Image (cartoon, rainbow over all chains, first blue to last red; front, side):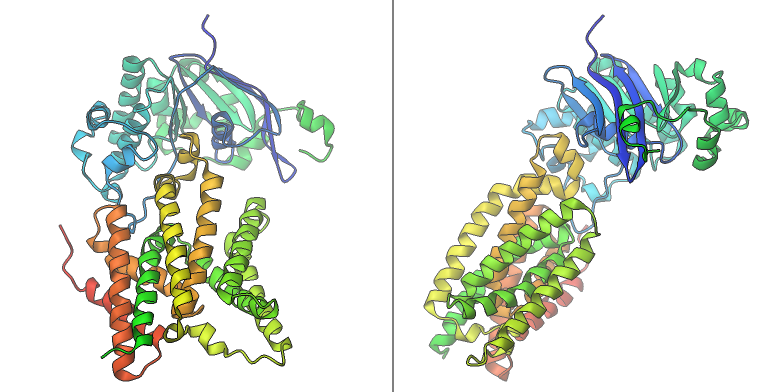
Length: 257
Length: 262
C-alpha cells in the first residue's frame, strides 16, 4: 500500500482549558476523498489548520509525505471592494505561471471566461471555481477544501461536487474537505469522518447512515431532509458518548476537560 | 513669484505625497487607518525625546514609531486583547507621554501646533534630503514586498500555505510605515497624517484596474493635493498642512462625481 500523504496521529488541541481536538488520528491516502463533518464548533476547521501546518497541535504528530504539494481553498475569501485585483493577477499572486497554464486551470473548473474579471465582482459560485482552479495550478497531490460549497445555491453545490470528483479522477489528487452538507458529501466522497472534538465515527457514506453514534448526534429525522437540518451543537455534544480524554494533555493537566 | 520657502515646501510635499500614495493603498486595503493614527500619535513622543536627547526630531520620531510598530506586532501575536484595543492603548499612551515629557522641559518652549498640524513652510534643505532618501528606501523596499503583501492582504492563511513568510512581511511593512509616518509629520502634522494615506488612495479607487495602477494614481492624486493645497495656502493665507488635506478631500469628492467606469 502506498504511503499516506498526510498522517495525523493523536492530535490534541487545547484552548482556554477546553479540548478543541481530542486525540484525533487520521490518514489521507493518495487519491481518496475524505470529508469531515460535524456540528458547529466541532473542530473541523481547526483540524484542517493543523493538517496544513498553520497551527501546531498541543500534542500529537503531523507527518507529511516528502515534498507534498498542497492546493488549499480557504473557507471564506472576502475581497474588499477597494482592492482592484483581477482573476488572472490573483492566480499568479504567489507563483509564476504562464498565461496558458492559468487559462487551462480556469477552463478545467469551467471558469475560463472569468480570466480578466475583477475578483471582487465574482458571485459566490464563481469565486469558489476560481479558488479551485488556482489550487490546481500547483499540481497538488492533496486538495484541502474548507467548506467549498459555502454560499452557493443547491444546484451550484451539486455542480461543484461533481467538479471536485472530476478533478480527483483527472489529476489523481486526494481531497480533504470540510462540509456541513451531509447529503451532497455522500455523492462524491470515499470516506467520511464525523468530528465532535474527537472522532465520533468514521466510514463510507453508505455505512455512516446506519451508525448508531451518528444517528444520535444528528437525529434520524434529518435523514430524508438532510439539506435543511439545523445543527444543535450543545445538545449533540451531550448525547455523544465519550469517556473523557485519554490523550496526554488530559493526563498531564487535570483542568483540561 | 514663489518665494524660496514655498519652493522647498513644494519639493518636500511632493516627495511625501509620492511615498504616501502607494503606502496609503495598503493602509486602505488592509484597514490599517487606526494603525496609521497610532504611529502618528506616538510621533509626538519622538519629538519630545528628540529635544530631550538633543537629536534631530525627525530621526527621534522614526525611532519611536519603529519601536511602537515592533511593540504592537508582538502584542498582537499574543492575542490577549483585540487589535483595536491595543492600538488605542498605545496611541493615547504615547501621545500623552509625549505631552507630559514636553511639559517637563521648562526651559524649552515647543510650539505644539507645528507638530500637530505640520510646518511644511519651515522645511530646510536637510529635511528635503532626509525626506527623499527615506522615501526612496521605503518605496524600493515596498516594491520588494509588493507581491507577498498583496497575497497576505487577500488571505493570510492562503499566503502562508503557499509559502509566504507572513510574519516577516507584515513586520517589515509595519516598520516601513513607521518610517513614512516620520517623514510625513513635518508636512501635514501628526493629526493629519492618516488623511494623506487614505484620501488619495480612496479618491482613485474607482479609476484603478490593478493594485499597481491604484498605487501610482494615489501618488499622483497626492501630488495634485500638495500643489493645490500649497497654492491655496499662498493665495488665501491659510495653514499649509490643513490646506493640503482640504485639497485632497475636494479631489476625493470631485472624483466620486465621475460616472462609474464600465
